[in-house]
Length: 417
Image 1 (spheres, rainbow, N blue to C red):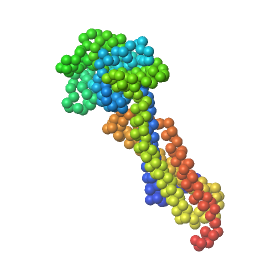
Image 2 (image 1 turned 180 degrees about the horizontal axis):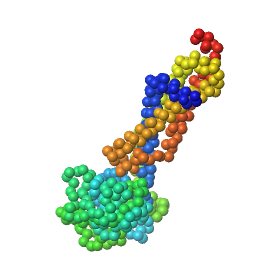
Image 3 (image 1 turned 180 degrees about the vertical axis):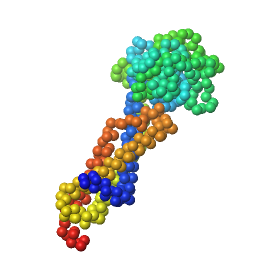
Image 4 (image 1 turned 90 degrees about the horizontal axis):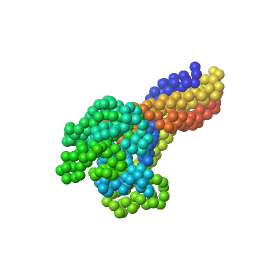
């Protein structure tokens, strides 16, 4: 009978203690895995979606809201900015700006946000077409990979968009008079582009023509606006401009402050706003880490006490085994195997529980769509959890194992007899 078989028999014999220790290990492993999955994918999602953006130009309001809306598509726009104010930033010969990407937001289809933009969007985000091609006219759409998968739309299919950002909003206005035709589908990139639908900005203006007309705003009557050059020649408004600078210098560093002080447009730096966001969430994350550490230590302490008590209860049994010829090393391996078997079972069960919980919560909380958090992903470092837990359990089991190894056979047998 090998060490693991003996360990299993003993664990089964002490089912109540084993169950309690197993429960602690399951919770420890599950919470650690959950924290690792959420934190790792959350930060990775935010960093990947920055793209080439150095600065965002949008209507005056909250800079963090503007970053969340225009880069991560998690919040509502702060308003629109007119092209009259923005044309200077769209010119290709701007001394500081390498590239300006305009965005027009406000509509959705099946809960996926429509983004009015130019054909430069794909290069700005290094997105690649999987099927079809980029939009080349108004009311032609390119779908992100997840949009195509979840809606079932294929090349040549048509759909009608709705006003607002929530598909379940009963008051949302449907643009019944205009249909978009799917002209391209993107490769999966793991970024927010997977969850978006891309159309021309002039399509957006046409969709909202009636609303704009009531406000006596200007309306685009020309050909489709596919590039920044087209936008410079026309009038209208956009939600924001994502700017990439030609380089980092004193002019680019002061560019945002100059915009905020001298124009009616707001400049928001994604790097600064994300640092503020991480500072806000960092405290909660650190607190959770302390709780997890306390739970791990509690699990190891419980395991140590359980093994110690088991050694006390089985002194006579161990002495008999030694008397029958079992070596001290075999006794030590038996106890270490018991700790390892219990820890591996508990931690692996906890990890599976964490992935299962995320899979259940994902559709309700839209974790993948909003934060890029998936239950099926094995994040880097996750394999270290069972390894580290086994190491800690071996340390916790070492003292009871050494004590069992040094048991005086003759004294124990004489006391029991």
